[in-house]
Length: 109
Image (cartoon, rainbow, N blue to C red):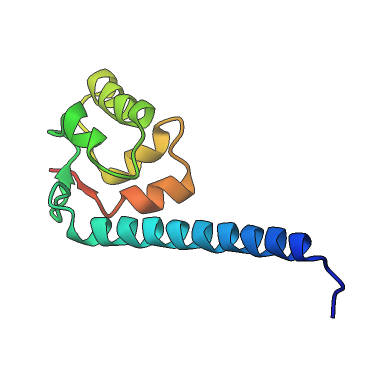
């Protein structure tokens, strides 16, 4: 195999151990995040009315950053009530990908 000195073997084992521990920690963090997503009580399963939602409520939605939440409220204040959920596409920063995530979270009444 490889002709390594005893000290080189120790270093290799140490590095391998560090990598494995790091991977284990990373796995646990990802697993915990998935569990928190499923169990998290702060997230509502009900859809949110775009015409009544507050900034603080929007900030609790995982896929909406603060700037987008502010723009959603600003759009409503500037243009009046939302007529349909598709109006979210008019907001700068809400592209097709983000809209596809948001359309199932909101409704207009």
